[in-house]
Length: 92
Image (cartoon, rainbow, N blue to C red; front, side, top):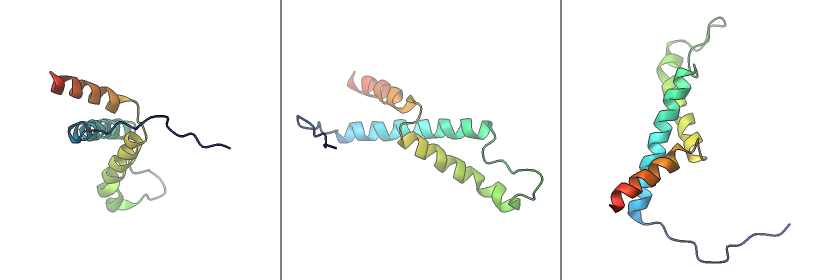
């Protein structure tokens, strides 16, 4: 198997663009966390006893972390759309 190497220099991202991209990923993560919560992820299961009060209190942290991992991995493309919109407004 051969490695693929870039043919030209990789464009550097400006600190401003990095902040915009970070904000866009945070927003996508928050959106995904709400969608996962609405879908029932992190709710205590009935029947086998569940994890008790501790599980109820900390499940939102797990849901938020799972959503951020999804956003960092590419998510649903919302972060890129938000980034482009923010960048366009900043450039005006």
